[in-house]
Amino acid sequence: MSFILVLLQPLLTKYLKAPTLDNKIQNLVQKSPKGLFIKTTLEILGIFKEKGINMKFFKICILISLLVTPSLIYANPSLTILSYSYFSDEDADSRPGEQYYNFFQPILNTYFNTVLTRTNHARLIKRLSTNEAVCSFNLIKTKARNKQLVFSQIPTYMHQQRKLFGFKNTLKDLPTKVSISKLLNNKHTFAIVSSTSYQQLDAIFSDYRTQVAKITGANSFAQLSQLLIHKRVDMIIDYENTMKMNLTDTQFSQLESRDISEYPEFINGYFACSKTSEGKKAIALIDNYMKTPAAYDFLKQTHHNSTSPEVAERMMAIYKTTFNIAQHK
Image (cartoon, rainbow, N blue to C red; front, side):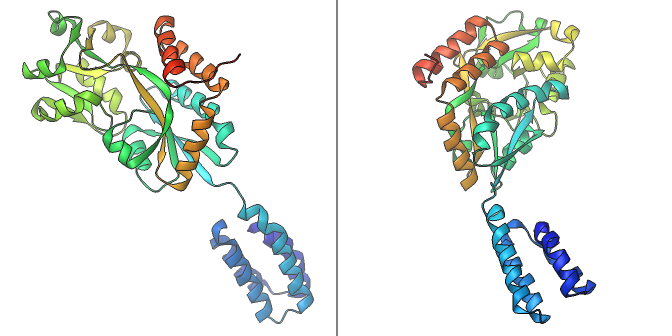
């Protein structure tokens, strides 16, 4: 809109010599969002007509408006990509978000003007549940989220399952794979992050509320490991890489982990958007993009960088057989 004012300024100076009129137009322009472009243009032209501007100048104004209208009317809609904070180290936290954003940006920018924003996990889920044009990636599906969000068909990341963590002395008599239900039944205490889903364990935790501390707010995943290391709870459930990022080497060396019998080997994380027209369009773009060889190459590199070669290959085999992602021939 300010572009119109720049174009009209010389003509205003020549024909009007009226600073009060110029101020009135300036106020209109500043208050007008792009979506009200045509309405505001007509209001500005109406002001000119009220001031007795001759028809020649009036037609010039209309011509200028017609010339600049298409670029504004057809400007790409905005879409915010939310990257969530797991780690207390901001540099470590920003890297995976930037990598995924850089991967998705070219396809999303064919339709949107995108921007990357970091936030904590609780706020991310809350914003995705609104009418705001926002998306994120690597989110685990739940029944509640399926009602509130739209998800991609193909996972953007395959998570290794969370593990049970506790002090060595606490876990010393437990087998390599444990049942969380049995541990809760034996009166052990846990801490969990309220904004995330523990999948098969969510219903179990709800039955033992007096033994489960729920963490909310910023840096909730960092708080989770701190509750354990300061012995406020007996055990927590978390990803190993998250634990290592939030604890010192000395602190982590005091702990042990166990596999969880209620969990399958891997859990899928998906691209997810708000249930808006922008969100649904973004999902359609991502679904097509995720079937390409470029997506396969990105996923292969990402999973090999985050886990062992053996585990990464098992994950990529699932991508090929279950989700039929194309590879380079």
